Length: 278
Image (tube, helix red, strand yellow):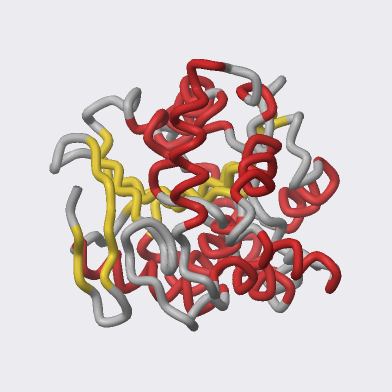
Protein backbone atom coordinates (compact mmCIF):
# COMPACT_ATOMS: atom_id res chain seq x y z
CA UNK A 1 0.00 0.00 0.00
CA UNK A 2 1.37 3.40 -0.99
CA UNK A 3 2.48 6.52 0.82
CA UNK A 4 2.08 10.10 -0.34
CA UNK A 5 3.95 13.15 0.93
CA UNK A 6 2.15 16.44 1.52
CA UNK A 7 3.35 19.73 3.03
CA UNK A 8 1.51 18.79 6.24
CA UNK A 9 2.39 15.13 6.75
CA UNK A 10 3.20 11.84 5.09
CA UNK A 11 0.06 9.80 4.53
CA UNK A 12 -0.21 6.05 4.21
CA UNK A 13 -3.31 5.09 2.26
CA UNK A 14 -5.28 2.23 0.75
CA UNK A 15 -6.79 2.41 -2.70
CA UNK A 16 -9.25 0.35 -4.68
CA UNK A 17 -10.78 0.71 -8.14
CA UNK A 18 -10.05 1.94 -11.63
CA UNK A 19 -7.67 4.94 -11.72
CA UNK A 20 -10.19 6.63 -14.01
CA UNK A 21 -13.14 5.79 -11.77
CA UNK A 22 -15.35 8.09 -9.72
CA UNK A 23 -13.09 9.42 -6.93
CA UNK A 24 -14.21 8.80 -3.36
CA UNK A 25 -12.29 9.67 -0.19
CA UNK A 26 -13.17 7.67 2.93
CA UNK A 27 -12.12 8.89 6.38
CA UNK A 28 -11.90 6.64 9.44
CA UNK A 29 -12.79 7.60 13.00
CA UNK A 30 -10.71 7.84 16.15
CA UNK A 31 -8.96 4.77 17.60
CA UNK A 32 -8.89 3.47 14.05
CA UNK A 33 -7.01 3.36 10.77
CA UNK A 34 -7.88 2.92 7.12
CA UNK A 35 -8.12 -0.82 7.82
CA UNK A 36 -11.65 -0.25 9.13
CA UNK A 37 -12.79 0.36 5.56
CA UNK A 38 -11.28 -2.83 4.09
CA UNK A 39 -14.51 -4.92 4.18
CA UNK A 40 -16.29 -2.06 2.40
CA UNK A 41 -13.51 -1.58 -0.17
CA UNK A 42 -13.56 -5.25 -1.08
CA UNK A 43 -17.11 -5.04 -2.46
CA UNK A 44 -16.99 -1.67 -4.22
CA UNK A 45 -17.35 -1.78 -8.01
CA UNK A 46 -14.17 -0.99 -9.91
CA UNK A 47 -15.87 2.07 -11.40
CA UNK A 48 -15.31 3.81 -8.06
CA UNK A 49 -11.76 4.89 -7.24
CA UNK A 50 -11.69 4.78 -3.45
CA UNK A 51 -8.83 6.20 -1.39
CA UNK A 52 -8.66 5.59 2.36
CA UNK A 53 -5.89 7.42 4.23
CA UNK A 54 -4.58 6.67 7.67
CA UNK A 55 -5.23 10.01 9.34
CA UNK A 56 -2.74 11.95 11.44
CA UNK A 57 -1.38 9.85 14.28
CA UNK A 58 -3.01 6.65 13.03
CA UNK A 59 -1.95 3.56 11.11
CA UNK A 60 1.27 4.12 9.23
CA UNK A 61 0.86 7.85 8.65
CA UNK A 62 2.99 10.34 10.58
CA UNK A 63 2.48 10.12 14.35
CA UNK A 64 2.64 13.69 15.56
CA UNK A 65 2.25 15.28 18.99
CA UNK A 66 0.06 18.11 17.71
CA UNK A 67 -2.28 18.99 14.86
CA UNK A 68 -5.43 17.13 15.94
CA UNK A 69 -7.87 20.05 16.03
CA UNK A 70 -10.76 19.52 13.64
CA UNK A 71 -9.83 22.47 11.44
CA UNK A 72 -6.21 21.29 11.31
CA UNK A 73 -7.24 17.80 10.26
CA UNK A 74 -9.51 19.28 7.60
CA UNK A 75 -6.42 21.03 6.25
CA UNK A 76 -4.64 17.66 6.29
CA UNK A 77 -7.40 16.34 4.06
CA UNK A 78 -7.07 19.34 1.76
CA UNK A 79 -3.33 18.73 1.44
CA UNK A 80 -3.98 15.08 0.58
CA UNK A 81 -6.61 15.98 -2.03
CA UNK A 82 -4.21 18.43 -3.67
CA UNK A 83 -1.46 15.80 -3.69
CA UNK A 84 -3.85 13.35 -5.36
CA UNK A 85 -4.69 15.97 -7.97
CA UNK A 86 -8.45 15.66 -7.43
CA UNK A 87 -10.78 18.51 -8.34
CA UNK A 88 -14.12 16.81 -7.66
CA UNK A 89 -14.91 13.83 -5.43
CA UNK A 90 -17.33 12.27 -2.95
CA UNK A 91 -16.27 12.61 0.70
CA UNK A 92 -17.29 10.03 3.31
CA UNK A 93 -16.61 10.63 7.01
CA UNK A 94 -17.16 8.10 9.78
CA UNK A 95 -17.54 8.85 13.49
CA UNK A 96 -15.15 11.63 14.60
CA UNK A 97 -14.09 12.11 11.00
CA UNK A 98 -17.61 13.18 10.19
CA UNK A 99 -16.61 16.41 11.91
CA UNK A 100 -13.46 16.61 9.77
CA UNK A 101 -15.57 16.02 6.66
CA UNK A 102 -18.05 18.73 7.65
CA UNK A 103 -15.22 21.18 8.35
CA UNK A 104 -13.65 20.37 4.99
CA UNK A 105 -16.99 20.88 3.24
CA UNK A 106 -17.44 24.24 4.96
CA UNK A 107 -14.23 25.50 3.39
CA UNK A 108 -13.91 23.52 0.17
CA UNK A 109 -17.42 22.64 -0.96
CA UNK A 110 -16.45 23.56 -4.51
CA UNK A 111 -14.21 20.47 -4.63
CA UNK A 112 -16.97 18.04 -3.61
CA UNK A 113 -19.66 16.20 -5.51
CA UNK A 114 -21.33 15.06 -2.29
CA UNK A 115 -20.85 14.63 1.46
CA UNK A 116 -21.73 11.38 3.25
CA UNK A 117 -21.69 11.13 7.05
CA UNK A 118 -21.70 7.64 8.59
CA UNK A 119 -22.53 7.37 12.31
CA UNK A 120 -20.96 10.79 12.44
CA UNK A 121 -20.09 13.10 15.27
CA UNK A 122 -22.91 15.67 15.28
CA UNK A 123 -22.41 19.14 13.84
CA UNK A 124 -22.70 20.52 17.38
CA UNK A 125 -19.56 18.64 18.46
CA UNK A 126 -19.20 16.20 21.35
CA UNK A 127 -18.70 17.08 25.00
CA UNK A 128 -16.49 14.58 26.82
CA UNK A 129 -16.62 14.66 30.65
CA UNK A 130 -13.28 15.48 32.27
CA UNK A 131 -13.33 12.20 34.18
CA UNK A 132 -13.36 10.28 30.88
CA UNK A 133 -9.93 11.50 29.78
CA UNK A 134 -7.94 9.27 32.18
CA UNK A 135 -9.91 6.31 30.83
CA UNK A 136 -9.04 7.26 27.25
CA UNK A 137 -5.40 7.59 28.25
CA UNK A 138 -5.44 4.16 29.91
CA UNK A 139 -6.41 2.54 26.60
CA UNK A 140 -2.79 3.06 25.46
CA UNK A 141 -1.59 0.29 27.75
CA UNK A 142 -4.70 -1.73 28.62
CA UNK A 143 -5.26 -3.92 25.57
CA UNK A 144 -8.13 -5.84 27.17
CA UNK A 145 -10.04 -2.65 27.93
CA UNK A 146 -9.32 -1.29 24.46
CA UNK A 147 -10.54 -4.52 22.89
CA UNK A 148 -13.80 -4.36 24.82
CA UNK A 149 -14.27 -0.73 23.80
CA UNK A 150 -13.80 -1.48 20.10
CA UNK A 151 -16.06 -4.53 20.21
CA UNK A 152 -18.79 -2.35 21.72
CA UNK A 153 -18.65 -0.32 18.50
CA UNK A 154 -19.62 -3.36 16.42
CA UNK A 155 -22.10 -5.29 18.60
CA UNK A 156 -23.37 -7.51 15.78
CA UNK A 157 -19.87 -9.00 15.41
CA UNK A 158 -18.69 -9.05 19.02
CA UNK A 159 -19.28 -12.80 19.35
CA UNK A 160 -18.44 -13.75 15.76
CA UNK A 161 -15.46 -16.12 15.80
CA UNK A 162 -14.72 -15.58 12.12
CA UNK A 163 -14.26 -11.83 12.67
CA UNK A 164 -12.04 -12.05 15.75
CA UNK A 165 -8.65 -12.04 13.92
CA UNK A 166 -9.66 -8.90 12.04
CA UNK A 167 -10.92 -7.22 15.22
CA UNK A 168 -7.68 -8.12 17.02
CA UNK A 169 -5.76 -6.40 14.22
CA UNK A 170 -7.93 -3.32 14.73
CA UNK A 171 -7.00 -3.39 18.42
CA UNK A 172 -3.32 -3.59 17.50
CA UNK A 173 -3.72 -0.65 15.13
CA UNK A 174 -5.43 1.41 17.83
CA UNK A 175 -2.70 0.68 20.37
CA UNK A 176 -0.06 1.87 17.91
CA UNK A 177 -1.57 5.35 17.54
CA UNK A 178 0.49 8.38 18.46
CA UNK A 179 0.24 8.84 22.25
CA UNK A 180 -1.33 12.27 21.79
CA UNK A 181 -4.12 10.86 19.64
CA UNK A 182 -5.66 8.91 22.53
CA UNK A 183 -7.13 12.09 24.01
CA UNK A 184 -6.50 14.83 21.43
CA UNK A 185 -9.40 13.92 19.14
CA UNK A 186 -11.88 13.98 22.03
CA UNK A 187 -10.55 17.38 23.09
CA UNK A 188 -10.80 18.58 19.49
CA UNK A 189 -14.47 17.57 19.25
CA UNK A 190 -15.10 19.27 22.59
CA UNK A 191 -13.87 22.56 21.12
CA UNK A 192 -15.67 22.21 17.76
CA UNK A 193 -19.23 23.32 17.07
CA UNK A 194 -20.57 24.05 13.58
CA UNK A 195 -24.27 23.82 14.36
CA UNK A 196 -24.97 27.49 13.60
CA UNK A 197 -22.81 27.37 10.46
CA UNK A 198 -24.26 24.16 9.03
CA UNK A 199 -26.75 26.16 6.99
CA UNK A 200 -23.89 26.80 4.56
CA UNK A 201 -23.86 23.12 3.59
CA UNK A 202 -26.08 23.05 0.52
CA UNK A 203 -24.17 20.37 -1.36
CA UNK A 204 -25.85 16.93 -1.63
CA UNK A 205 -25.44 15.31 1.79
CA UNK A 206 -26.47 11.90 3.10
CA UNK A 207 -26.53 10.80 6.74
CA UNK A 208 -26.34 7.09 7.60
CA UNK A 209 -26.80 5.70 11.12
CA UNK A 210 -26.87 2.23 12.67
CA UNK A 211 -29.79 1.81 15.05
CA UNK A 212 -27.63 -0.11 17.56
CA UNK A 213 -25.04 2.69 17.76
CA UNK A 214 -24.16 3.33 21.42
CA UNK A 215 -21.81 6.24 20.64
CA UNK A 216 -23.91 8.53 18.43
CA UNK A 217 -27.60 8.64 19.27
CA UNK A 218 -30.59 9.13 17.01
CA UNK A 219 -31.55 12.54 18.41
CA UNK A 220 -28.20 14.21 17.71
CA UNK A 221 -28.12 12.64 14.26
CA UNK A 222 -31.55 14.08 13.49
CA UNK A 223 -30.39 17.51 14.69
CA UNK A 224 -27.52 17.32 12.20
CA UNK A 225 -29.97 16.28 9.48
CA UNK A 226 -32.17 19.30 10.19
CA UNK A 227 -29.23 21.70 10.43
CA UNK A 228 -27.77 20.81 7.00
CA UNK A 229 -29.92 22.15 4.13
CA UNK A 230 -28.34 19.78 1.62
CA UNK A 231 -29.14 16.68 3.70
CA UNK A 232 -32.04 14.98 1.95
CA UNK A 233 -32.32 11.85 4.05
CA UNK A 234 -31.23 9.84 7.05
CA UNK A 235 -30.69 6.19 6.12
CA UNK A 236 -31.07 3.91 9.14
CA UNK A 237 -29.33 0.53 9.09
CA UNK A 238 -31.19 -1.97 11.26
CA UNK A 239 -29.34 -4.18 13.76
CA UNK A 240 -26.07 -2.37 13.05
CA UNK A 241 -23.91 -0.52 15.55
CA UNK A 242 -21.36 2.26 15.19
CA UNK A 243 -19.30 0.49 12.51
CA UNK A 244 -21.42 -0.35 9.44
CA UNK A 245 -18.39 -0.55 7.12
CA UNK A 246 -17.40 -3.65 9.13
CA UNK A 247 -20.77 -4.93 10.35
CA UNK A 248 -22.82 -4.40 7.19
CA UNK A 249 -20.54 -3.37 4.31
CA UNK A 250 -22.96 -4.48 1.59
CA UNK A 251 -25.87 -2.50 3.01
CA UNK A 252 -23.64 0.54 3.48
CA UNK A 253 -22.24 0.30 -0.04
CA UNK A 254 -25.75 0.05 -1.50
CA UNK A 255 -26.83 3.24 0.29
CA UNK A 256 -23.73 5.17 -0.72
CA UNK A 257 -23.67 4.02 -4.35
CA UNK A 258 -27.37 4.76 -4.77
CA UNK A 259 -26.78 8.24 -3.41
CA UNK A 260 -23.71 9.24 -5.40
CA UNK A 261 -25.28 8.05 -8.65
CA UNK A 262 -28.44 10.12 -8.15
CA UNK A 263 -29.21 13.17 -10.24
CA UNK A 264 -28.92 16.17 -7.96
CA UNK A 265 -30.86 18.81 -9.90
CA UNK A 266 -33.13 19.42 -6.92
CA UNK A 267 -30.17 20.60 -4.87
CA UNK A 268 -29.85 23.62 -7.13
CA UNK A 269 -33.22 24.73 -5.74
CA UNK A 270 -31.91 24.29 -2.20
CA UNK A 271 -28.84 26.37 -2.97
CA UNK A 272 -30.98 29.05 -4.55
CA UNK A 273 -33.36 29.30 -1.60
CA UNK A 274 -30.48 29.51 0.88
CA UNK A 275 -28.86 32.29 -1.13
CA UNK A 276 -32.15 34.21 -1.18
CA UNK A 277 -32.43 33.95 2.61
CA UNK A 278 -28.99 35.47 3.17
